[in-house]
Image 1: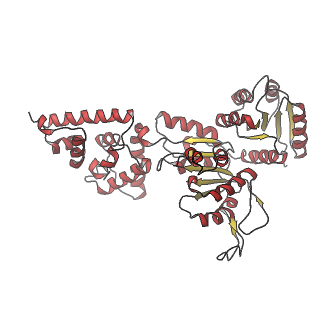
Image 2: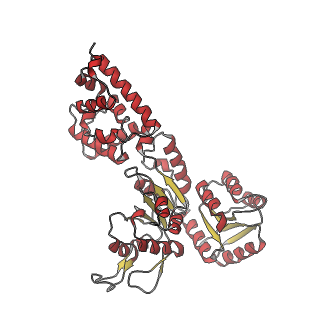
Image 3: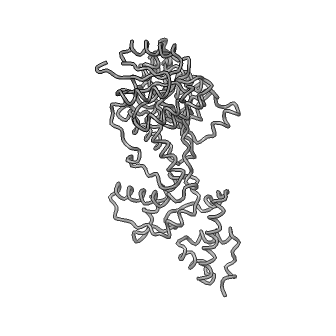
Length: 445
């Protein structure tokens, strides 16, 4: 190594300290040992430490307590935990709290050395804050919680499983995890497991050698190998076949691949992020998805809430989408009235953020007088209204019903005038009057 890198190892078992010291010294590191958490904290105060490797379970101070106190004074210190198989949930919690990675005992010393070298190499890159990534998080509690968790997880090397309905922004979150890690200048490879036929996916992921099948006219590097040193994003992971599940599991366990038709294996180091809109836990229970692969993928889980659960974020999102579309297409400024924004917040958006974006682009194209009204958006009212199901939606229904009643009273039951007053289409008020059993003749007096 070009410069001395200092590693602090912490374990209450002297024999493990001895083994770690020998292995890490042989790899060129300067090693400092501590038998418990308090001793480790004293070393951190007196020496410059580049990375900390600690046992998870210790009698005087647990690994989590050590992480909390170490991060208070050394917020960017990378931490790897060593944990017994039975305490993996604790290690996963530690990763969510800010640890970089963990290894289960008994561990391979070579794997530990490789992890340390990779983490230290990444730590040389300047770190950015996720809130500077051009992504609109909004102000809803669910998204603020997701933002905080992403900040902690991004710097780690742990596999991440991103869950959420179609259109919520899973690929955006995956890209942010890559951009705000130390891997931002390394390959970011996206694999669409949902649209790639099973027969082609194996070759796409693992590559093949010339002559391995009929159309293999030359060697081809797989996407996993292309992600070496960077991030591999497996989108719609729930759609892969049983055979591909087995091959992917082997890669995640051994970090080696074998091209189709090849004999030798290749080592690949990359971070794996997977995403799906499917209920993988249910698929595991039904025997359609391997349980061991499921737990390998979900070291950390990020759940993205649907748009209907964070309606307060719709105005900010809407204004951003309109501004971006106008800028990209060199269009004149377009107004989004408050009544349109309020109407947007009454809908449940089964297509989530993607549907909102598409509707607003339609509105920009169809609007008159540079002002977007609800009827310009061509939203499928029937589909959206029928998706109300929870207490929040019931409350929104009540507010909407009361607003329609007030408008009908003000216009003496004339629906087209009430629709104009509310900023909705005639079709919409006809549907909603029927939905809430409102007879316009009752409001003519």
